[in-house]
Image 1 (tube, rainbow, N blue to C red):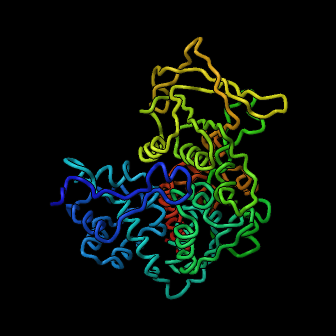
Image 2 (image 1 turned 90 degrees about the horizontal axis):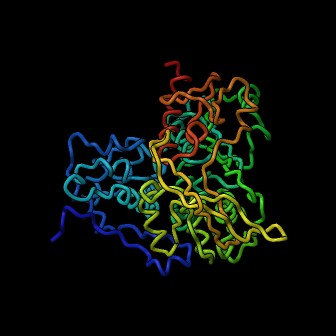
Length: 462
């Protein structure tokens, strides 16, 4: 008999096997497992899970359809709110959002909402389900800058309303962070990401790649010369941060962005590609977020012995618990309460190690977390050949610096209204990491939806 207080287990690759390949770690639910998990849902009238979802998916509605085996109906329910269900089902932090407030979780384990969303999206792809396209356009042209989660979401929502939308992407492949940032073993590119992008294109959205806004063309030119009546900036935050410690410019020091982009977008992890990447044999990843876990687990799969160096304790790790758990299972070491002070180099300027200091937690800082304080006399060295810095990112100032009247804050983030995405420049809207700094995929999607609402209100005169 099924225990309704516990989730239906999700099948995964064995850690000893997956640590040496780039195949997806989580294998997801099959039809029977999905229906069994859906049957655990309490069908709450005032569903708290919907309030916990940034894009307000009708969660009880789609789960009810899954329980009854109506998978196409479930896909239609999700499509009303989300253009990227296969992505969200894999990478959203459900444990702090929809699942975090699930009533079933009060006396047992919450419903596996993310895994059910993934199942429906995968079923849709495998069975050729495509969201409905708008019957006609309304004649208004909108430009979207960036084809990441906020840009794709904004474009999809506007296309459903009849707008003629063109996305401009700086790189040679669309998808933004979905394509270059998140590793293959968490988010397969040729199946999941490409299919989600194709579904957005089937709504009528055009995507132009290799267009660097601010160099190839400016926002002013798009609006004044090319007839776009509104612009949404969803360009993300791709400018990496560094510590400013001695030796940081040495050969063998990467930003996590560069390391992951080479591996993901440029296929450096594949033997049949010639993309160079100094994968390293003894690698330290500095940072404790999801990107740090991604970089560390990528380096492991490329054959390295990997450590994660983080200046706070495990309780303060900002990465998803699932990612930390998987990293540990795969054999990655955690050097917690440890902070680098110098990167050591050999006579040729290559990394040979890193000098670190042990830390202890003091009083809380502005973030609410206890501030790490160095322990005097605790310095030590670790032998390395590669250091990957994963300390966060900020928006590239190229767009804001080439657009008249666009206000930014001290972090170079674009200032925009949260509910509409409206910036200080009339007709220009923004959202996602370009506004907030680095955040999650689902929050970027929420901002994309807000931007679409703001643009629709602006152009329809409401």
